[in-house]
Length: 260
Image (cartoon, rainbow, N blue to C red; front, side, top):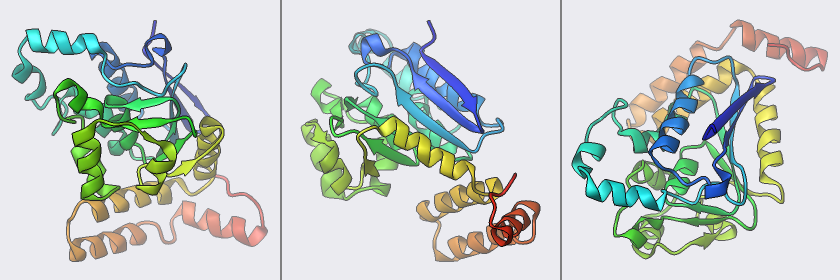
């Protein structure tokens, strides 16, 4: 059975973790499937992605049996090679979604622990149900977060919050996650809300949305004021007067929806 499914409708890719009987826990096969799903969308004709998990939880973290296999084998040989550009396989589980050129919205419920939490951090936005519980769970197993979390967390929240989550391994509520900047929005039905956000994005200029994601990445990279200002100008110059922007203007003047 597939660990991940992807369905594209109306330019929106619906990516679902389908290992619900295991709370979508990440083993090597699941990691491969998540990364493959992201990579398959790199050149797809899409405008947004909705990322969700079937069953009781979004993703409860690494499959515990994977720990035993890792310890019994060659840990350095698994985690040190840069198999996906600047990442290893498990880091790419989260980072592939940041590399996608379109916005990714994660719908969170139940356990969002460890690997699942870092996967969610890779999304542009996180919509969470009130029952969602978030945790940097690795310390429970004598490990540290190593799936991109230390790239992504500092972009979202304070150092003391990162330290508390990392040192304690204690889950927090979705409400606390929102206060700390880790959850974008709370929703009674996060999947429906994520789909609605994706539909709104899909109705905007595709080239402007992609430019905005590129620009935000530059702004978050620490590239410096000069580089960010130049990137703003470059992206804007590439949009002004082009077909998508002209269609937006025409649609606004005619009080109709744009057609891209």
